[in-house]
Length: 286
Image (tube, rainbow, N blue to C red; front, top):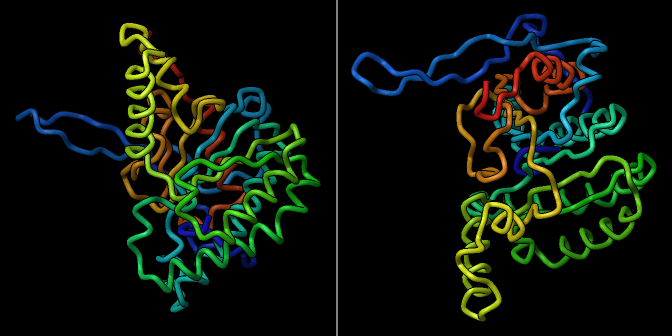
């Protein structure tokens, strides 16, 4: 969304009708070295969602919104223009997810690593985040969207924290889509903080180490009240998870598309949901 998002009109790439999304597979070569194999699995655009896909929607979709900078560079524009264009993609995907009845949507908006970017870009992103909250909260409210934030929010500028609190309060009584924004978020940081919290409980005598289960551990994560993602989408074609929801995506279906985030709109989202419908989720079974 802001490292990875931001608002302009929808654009269509010249190759928009080609089959462009890819699924990452892992295999082993004859010398037992891992190799990455790519297979085309889903067309870039789907105009309508099939009844079958509508009947098997994921409960929770998580998205790594990547490619804003490259989108801007391809058009010889400042990076912030890519973030603005990415915000329009976020707006469309949020609205579409709510209309379909998807219950949870997590957007990777700003990672802990993003603090290492140039200060002027980070400052611009924080200002844009405030602008986004001001402009979008009324529409989110109209569309019955609830807002939650995960990450080290205390690291955000105070003005951002205040606007986040206002938006969360305004949307708190809604019961449609729950939008989760990952801000100043890192999966490893989340796990370390959970371990530290559990260790403190053990030290205080409030928890026996023998009673620490996966369920107990999960209750110390930022997402303690949120179900794990069923589908993880990454845009821009990068084959990595980028420290996102490391615990929670253990059994998520992964879908990587070369489409840059500002070009990822309703048709591309439909295509991802169609591919999800074709998956057989075994959870380690047959």
